[in-house]
Length: 203
Image (cartoon, rainbow, N blue to C red; front, top):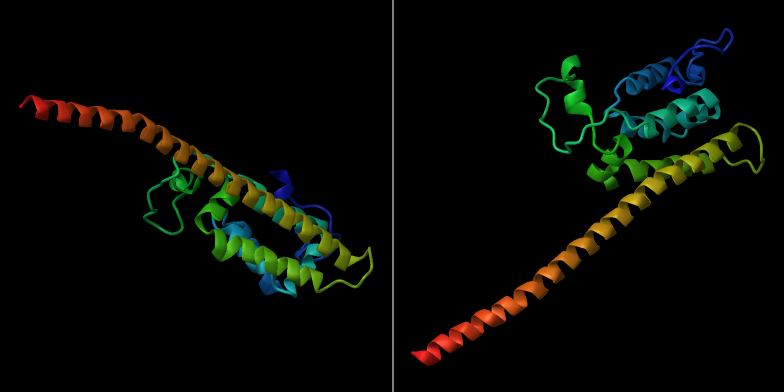
């Protein structure tokens, strides 16, 4: 979306687009590299901002917007959940749609395939780093960072809750199907036993 990139603003500062003027040149370069890698950018960006020094840059609204877009934009869609592995890294431009698309969006895909190792613990680290900046004041850079990271954590939690509820629904549905199959197969088994007993008596 347009809110993820775009120039403008910033006056004469060196990094006007994302508020990256608050980062070192090396970190700013890393940030731009991560933003340009859509399929793997979610864990990379979360780990980047879990750092106690880098998280201070999230006081900038443009940088907040860029991070939100990177996390919550669904990205290219395709119905198939299983895709072939790429032959080359980076993926060829003509193969990106077929190899890097997901059926449910990038964040859902990340949570399903690496639920414990990356996203949730890193968001927890971000939240802890933000809370360590608390000065007790309701305004200012620290308050802006804390409020933003708290909102971000709650939104990620909503994705996790949805997945947990969906898994519980699927489990209940499968159990109901197994019970229904058992109820159908039990009379059949009884009928077969009865038929076998009757045949034995006639002999």
